[in-house]
Structures are given as C-alpha cells and as structure tokens.
Image (cartoon, rainbow, N blue to C red):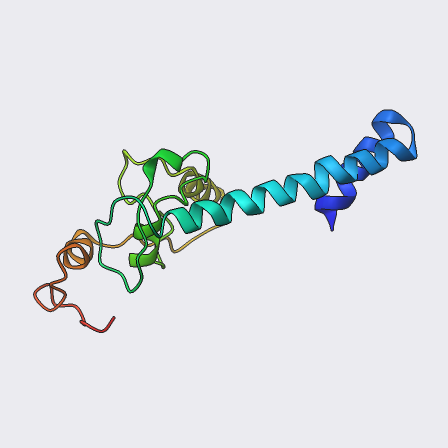
Amino acid sequence: MLGLLLPALVGGLAYGSWEGAVSGLLWGGLVRMFVLEHTIWAINSFLHMFGTRPYESRENSRNGGIFALLTFGESWHNNHHAFPDSPSFGLTWYRLDPGYWLIRLLAAGGLARDLRLPSGRRRAAQRTGRREAAGLDPAA
C-alpha cells in the first residue's frame, strides 16, 4: 500500500493539488509496479529458454549474466534453482550480484546471519551430475 500511497502523497505535495496526487499514484505507483513486475516475469520466462546452464536442476532454468545489474543478480537463474538456499546467486566474486552485496551489508550490520554459500564440492557435484561421487545424497 505504501508503494501506492507514498507516490500519491509526494505528487500531491509537490504540485499542491489532487491532480498531482492522482498523477503520482498513476505514474509513481501503478505504472512503476506494472513495469517492474512485467520486467521481472519477462526475464524469468526468457531465462527458462535462453542462456547458459552450468548446473543441473529439475527444470530448464538458465543464467543470463547480461541482465545481472538490471535484476540485482536474479538473472543467475540456473544458479538460483540449483542452490535455492544460497544467499548469492552469482556464486563467484566476478559475477555481478548486487542482491548478495546488500545481504552482506545487512550481515555486517547484524541484520542478517547464518549466510551459507554452497561448497566447491557441492557445486562440482551439481555441475557434473555426479552427486554420489561427491558423497552427496543423489535425491537432494
């Protein structure tokens, strides 16, 4: 609700009128949410058809690094599906993952804890599909 009311309030105060409030509600609230949601779902759909697939997962998810900044790291979609419990979707330092950077900042401030990245052994097993060879449960 704040995502709708705050832009309406700002528009109303900035223009000193009901028209400003309606404009703020429309453009700062409804249109902004519409565009954001459609961008997220379009990229989600796109990343189930195109991109790289470095890890095995139960569905056809793929990575699309070119979208990393636009999606705050959510475009490392295959990584996310392969390791859904990981706070980092990029998994390596050189992959842009602003969402993880924010989580690390929150952890430094004591607002997030118990951050666990998948081990190199677990990532290798998921990459090759040889979960048993790495000593991991093949059903997990």
